[in-house]
Length: 106
Image (cartoon, rainbow, N blue to C red; front, side, top):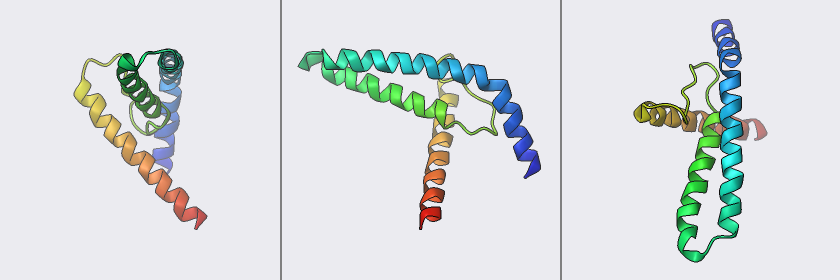
């Protein structure tokens, strides 16, 4: 309700710049990796595809992170377990949103 909305607004304002900078850095790295993938030979394509897939996952994490939680940086965090835990939360949130959208369209 009202409490959750207030929390969302507070955290959105608080972490706006961090999320913006992470999104910008990841987008830049993703473009670079895709360019490298286009000009790569067959031997290095597999590694580059993995890098692109990882960056796309990072971008989804930043874009779909729940607004009512404290943001956990996926780039600067030393605690990788916490990041993986939050990635799972983001995946669940994305799945819930897509289910809601499908229900609304039906």
